Length: 399
Ligand SMILES: [Zn+2]
Image (cartoon, rainbow, N blue to C red):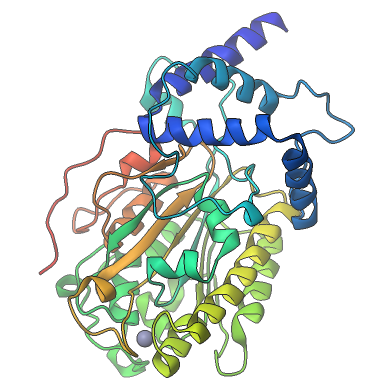
């Protein structure tokens, strides 16, 4: 028992020392918040229970639970080296006291000490990947909506609110680059409508890879054109919910049903923010309301993971296909080209990513997490920094 505890602290100490300044301040914020406000702590617990997340100090656990130990240890380890300045001054995602739930999906420490960081991080505890896209989500909308559940997840994630999509920043070509790991010039999807006679994207995509490896692949989407990202044979389950009648809650409900059935790679697409943006404008009150509602559907997904006991072994990536301005998204301007990219799950450090992230990095990152071979033809690179590793050199930027 003592030896096990020693190993445990050894790993925690290694992880703590490996954290960069951003993550340190992040951890300090969490510790300071929970340690300084007992009443706040109670309300956090209550909120967690309301949201269906497991309590860290419920009756059947002692008060010296591992997570409490982590907090105390980190506090003493880091209290002498915390950077000065605002705890969240570096990040546009701000701390919202009304949405302060901090436990999920905080990176889980492995109980086995490892000599090298790569080995430590690569411990195969990621068993599946859930990729979620909010169509047309400009990063600013996350705070303005607000998307409380996404903010909550982001605070335990590796993320950037400054990732880039491809040009043209349209739903179908951009999602294809996201899932095929390639620039548009290679995947060949130049259209943005559902045109079955055009066939499917050229080349190997993440669904091809996963399916060929015997993994179960699931797509639940709100726009039928996304069928053309990959061949039907590569998706074990494909569900299209017509956004004009189905709406986001139905998409989330279908996805949760598929969680019950089991999956290795699931892609869920929420369309409504984009639809409303075209009608009422980007960042309009109506669009922000749509994103707020989509965020509630997103919570349904997170609850689905918990209900099926998948939350501690699932890597969750949330991103978008493009931004928007006015009532469209057709330019190379930052408003159209900038997207959020947020990844959380087992072993993922809580930090703001400093390396540039491109939409086509999503497929190789998923492949890496699932231990799948990454095709040489892919233009994207694994977002290694999000796994706590040294960044890879980018191959090339799309034209
Ligand atoms: Zn659109």
